[in-house]
Image 1 (tube, one colour):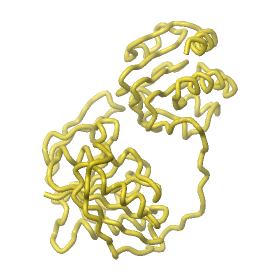
Image 2 (cartoon, one colour; image 1 turned 180 degrees about the vertical axis):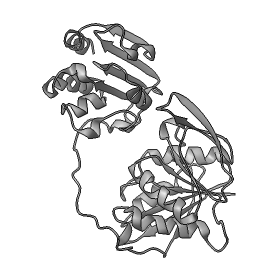
Image 3 (cartoon, helix red, strand yellow; image 1 turned 180 degrees about the horizontal axis):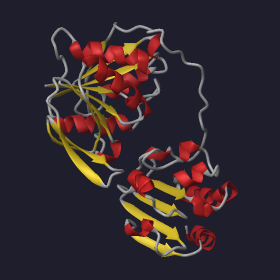
Image 4 (cartoon, rainbow, N blue to C red; image 1 turned 90 degrees about the vertical axis):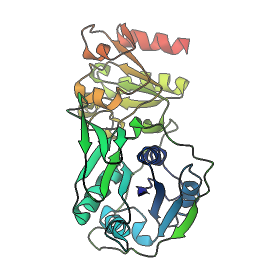
Length: 314
């Protein structure tokens, strides 16, 4: 049994979610191969070769993969999966990120198998657990597909060590531009704060912040804590902050060591994105707010009084 993990990377470096995905692969068992598809992605491939438990790294260095367009990457993955036999790989895994969610459904369609989405636990080589109904229930799913195509919710698995491995690196010559899409451009948000999904501490604001200017209080607290700043969908929809800060079922899934929810009522869609945090602190003036049901520590107070006081104590 051999498992193919699709690396999440920026060509220059691996994303932390790759380590969580390899951890999920290790629980399935068998040899683990990692595919690094990109352009001038040697540094990412070298980092992948050092991951503990990885047996081989496949490098597809091609201009067609520079921006990991799914229309180009999916045929490559499907071809590698089929190999010289009906199933060269028993499992294909990717992190449940925008890239993973773009690529793997296309792979599953090309292989004519079903996809299992956002697993949080491995029961056996063919049985997995995944959240449904915004995380209010956990489904146990068993697949009889010849190739199991799976996205992994990174918060469900502790990452493997990024060092200690010595995997063989093999170049993959296959792959070409499918001509179905083209990369136009991107706008990257620049911040000195940690990336939201990788931060150990996250401070999030909700509709209770009242407007975008008031997020300055959270930014000041986050800077002292070395934290990332997030927001609820209500705050994003109200235009307080950009949507790349959204935490929740339709935003980013986070599981930091400490999550501070400020002015967030706690709709189930938001809870689905942060309830796996190790410690949850809620600050809300409404003592009946649902957020207090999942919080380890709750403070019923006016956030505009509590946050400045908290900042002074940090």
